[in-house]
Length: 201
Length: 201
Image (cartoon, rainbow over all chains, first blue to last red):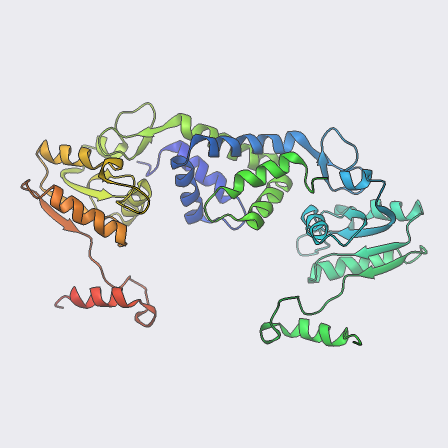
């Protein structure tokens, strides 16, 4: 005898596939959805269905866009500086930088980082497309904003070599103490980086 | 200009309604679903739709059941002892006790606990239905397994008074140190309860 009715069990299995959701959280969410107004689960189901049908990938920067548009809002925005490209790993990184509100250039989304362990090589990322954008000219600076991780560092180094033949300035986001952080609890590597990158005041 | 395409934004809003899911987790989950195979979001959407259509409430114990059955599997199981009823707050509690595998009686799901602050009174819970089951006779023991919280305690006391006129044994789950717990990190109230309930060995 199954402990739970099949539809509920199926929802728990589907929820367990989400990152950070284990069996206990999945049960809790499923029972919450069962108890909550039907609108809550209904709107979630609708949004999930629309997600794939209504979103696409920008043909220029590979950020997420609406399916009926070849370019994302940022690429289509003539107000933004098309001479500077900020290279990020994921669409979420675009969102993070946009929220900071200090960058007025365009983006390029790689959709991942180099990772030999996971079998992700340059051919799995949007690297060739970035080189083509640089080759087409008109780009003065590439800001590499991959994650400050081993994979992000490897990706940045690879890009630097790849783009060395073009007359384009290549920069990387600064490393150092995070604002609001606590020196006491900062890891060694970050302190080393913050020391190495110290600035006159 | 919106930072995100509307379908993605809508999914994030829908995910934020889940308990324990804040704006950051909701974004992370939404981007995960965007990147994951279509099957992952598709099966989740299907399970959400089926949840309400295919599940119902047991007419006897008010546990969750399939919509086309008047009784849940436990109530319908003639092998189980119908003289003992375990009273719980939520269907998840039934699952927890069933997983422990030591209880062979039937259940009664109150669907909540008394909470004057949240405006939940006896009329909002399945208390009358429990009294009717007791009144119908044939019950020898009621095990009150409400949560060891203020609301759970209040609910247990209320039930005890309510059922005092019937010749039925009323018990409550034992309080004490949780197995695998650490005395050092156990809260005062639990230690007091464990001392008061100490047993000869």
